[in-house]
Amino acid sequence: MALVAEKVSKRYSGLLALDSVSLELPPGRILALIGPNGAGKSTMFEVLSGMRKADGGKVVLDGTDVTELPPWQRCRLGIARTFQVVRPLAAMTVLDNVKVGAFVRHHDASEAEAVAREALEQVGLADRASQLARSLTLLQRKQLEVARALATQPRYLLLDECFAGLRAAEQDVSMQLVRRLADRGLGLILVEHSMRIVMRLAEEVMVLHHGKKLAQGTPAQIAKNPDVRAAYLGARDVVG
Amino acid sequence: MLDHQPWLRYLQPVVLLIVAILVAQVVPSRYANALVLFTLYAYISICWNFVGGLAGKLSLAHGAFFGLGAYISAVLFVDLGVPLLVGGVIAAAVVAIFAWIMSAIAFRRRIGALYFALLTLAFAYVLLELVRQYEIAYKLLGVHLPLVDDPLNLIFLNKFNSFYIGMVMVAIALAVWIWVSRHRFGYMLAAIREDEEAAKALGVNVPSVLTVTMVATAAATSFAGVLAAGYLLSVEANFVMSFEWMNIVLAVTLVGGLGRMYGPVVGAAFITIIGEIVRSLPQSIAAGGISTIVYGALVLLAATLLPSGIVGIARRDRELVVR
Image (tube, rainbow over all chains, first blue to last red; front, side, top):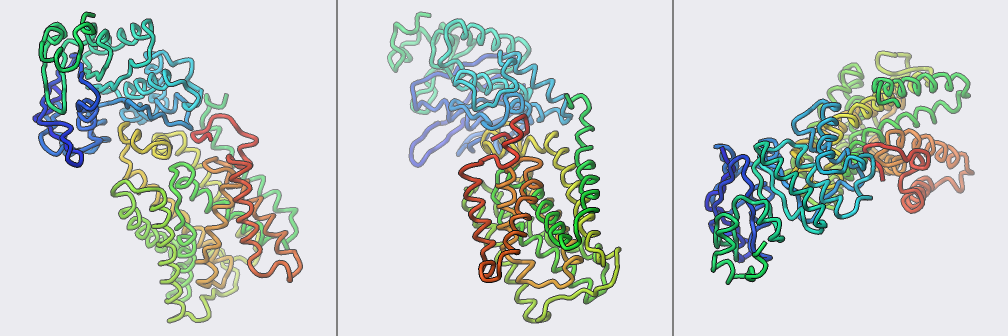
C-alpha cells in the first residue's frame, strides 16, 4: 500500500524536468517536496496526478500500475491534487465546485452535498458555500482547491503550495488540518516553500534540484545536509 | 424553499404545458404557424443548450441534425411507407451516428473552442450537401407528405395539434434539464465548461461526458425534425437543412439566456414574435433575408447588453450556470 513513483522521467522539449526520480508515499505519511523554482516539483505532481504522461518510469497506486491512466481515472482510484495556480469553476457556487469533487464517489445528489459541506467545513469555507467561486479572494480560492480535492475522498492528496500567502495563524489552522488528514490515514505530498511549515509538518523531505533527487530524509537530516545547504537553502533559513 | 420537495420542480414544465394549451384556445388560427415555430425553436434550443450552455461547447451542427430528422423521416414515410414516428427513430439513430463520429474526432484529444466550432460547421455543410445531392438525384421537387388527417403520423388538419405535440416535447426537454442540472451529469458538464483541466483532476471523464451529451442532444434534436415534417408536409433540403435554423437557435438561446433553463423558451417566444413582425412588413422590406439581419442584430445586442439574456434580468439566483 503506497503511492509509488519508480524512476520517473519527464522531458519538456530538451529540458529534463525530471531525471529518474523515485518516491514512495505510504498512507498516513506526510512527504514534503522542496527545491528551488524549476527543480521539478510541479512536474512530479503533473506526472503523479496524470495530467502529463511520464516519458519514462512508472507510477504505481496501491499495487496498481496507473502510468497509462488518464487523470480522471487516477482521481477515482484515489489520487487528488490541488493546483498551484488555482482553477476555481468560476461561474459556479463554492458548494457546487466542491460537489463536483464529491460526485466522484457519491452519485446521489444529497449525499454528495453532505460530503461537500463537510469538506468546506474542514477548510473553513462553510460560510461561503452559496457564493460564486469567482467572488473568492485568492486565499479562499486556495482553500477551495483543498476542499474540492478532499471531497473526492482520496487516499493520497497532493497539495501544491496551498500554504503560500497564508498568515501565520492561518497556516497553523491549515497545518492542523493536514495533520488530522494524515492521522486518518491519508498520504500527503506537499510542495512547499516555507521551511517553517516543512520542518513542522513533514515526516520526510525530498529535495529536488534540476530534476534530480538531491537528498531525502527527515527534516532534521535535510536541515543538516551540507549538499542541500550548499545547493540553495541558505543556512539560516533552515533553523525553524 | 423548494429544495425540500425537489419533485415540485418537475411540476413547472407541466404547468407550462397546461398554460400553453389554455392560451392556444383563444389564439386566432392564423397564428397557429407561429405557435408551431415557437415550439420548434424552443425545443431545439433547449437541446442545444445542454451542449452550448451547460458544457460550453459551441456546436453549429444541431441545425443540420434537425433537418436530417425531418428529411430522413419524410423520405422513409413517402417512399417506403414507414410510419413517421418509426422513421423518426431511424432518423435519430442515423443522426446519433453522425454526432458520434463528430465527437470521436473532436473530443479524443483536447481541442480548442474555435476548432470545435469549425468542425461542427463543416459537418453541418457536409450533411446539407449530402441531402441536397440526394434531392437533385431522386427528389427534384422535394418530399411531399399527403394532406390527410393522420394523427399517428403527426399529420393534422388542425395545425394547433402540432403545437400541442411540440409543447409536450418542450415540457419533456425541460424536465430532462431539471433532472440533469440537479444530478452528477450536469455538474460534470458545468465543470467541463468552466475548466476542463480542473474537471479531469476531479474525476470527470471529459471525452465520454461530452460524447454522450452530443449524441443524446443530436438525436433529441432530430425528433423536432419529425414534428416539422408532419407539420410542413413538403420537406425540401434547402429549407429544412438551411443554416437559418442554427442562426435562430443561437439567437433564441443568447437572447433568452445561455445555460438557463427557461432561456430557450423565453428566447423562442421573443424570436417568434420578432419573426411575425418581420413577416408582416411590406414585401419590399421583408424580402432579401431581412430576418437574418434582425436575428444577427439581436444576438449582437444580447451579447453586449444582456450577457445573461432576458431570463438573466429576472433570475439571478442559484442555477448550475450563473454568469
